[in-house]
Length: 260
Image 1 (spheres, rainbow, N blue to C red):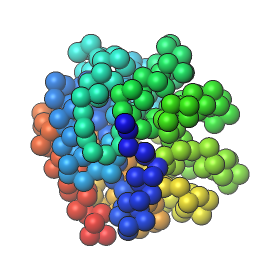
Image 2 (cartoon, rainbow, N blue to C red; image 1 turned 45 degrees about the horizontal axis):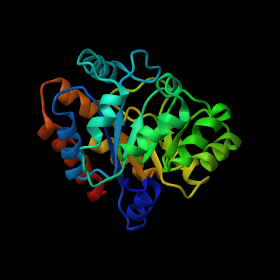
Image 3 (cartoon, one colour; image 1 turned 90 degrees about the vertical axis):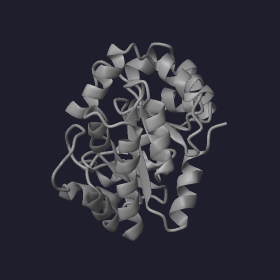
């Protein structure tokens, strides 16, 4: 039985904890599930698991490389979810994938696969709000919480509609562009955090380009409930680090967030 995503994050937030959601690409190495568990043990509040896809629209070079490695190893949605069934991370798991991989088996079947693998939430970034109804309904029916992205260019009215439909948490997009490490925090990261917090009581977690412990703290000081960190952690794995390196990266961000 999957842990409930929004309930878990709300409980942590209400205790005064800043939320940390690291990312790992499923199937990228033999020990990717060990990296996932290391990140959970190091202080993650949930872990985002990327299901590799050959033509991502949102992923920058680092995440693209992890997906390429996973696909070269023969990773498929079925294989990644089968491996997840063996994982007891102790925190909610959130699958991130693209709609082509949902469409092929059908929304209802894909949502069932996620639920059977113990996945609590899903991010499908290339499904716009206006077309999300069928997928969201299928996910709701299986108890899978659909996380929606909120862009910094969205109007206040659109942000309100995104927040209303979002489940689990609202994913604030820190900047326009693809994922990847950045040397400085974009001003839009601060503004989207403030705007979303003024719109919803659901957990607001900001991601894309959040690369260092200091940047994570900065986003939370601007009002976000937490951060998603992906490329900065995946780069360590691509550079030859194993689960320990992933855990160390998460532990450093966790320590900074706890210090405030």
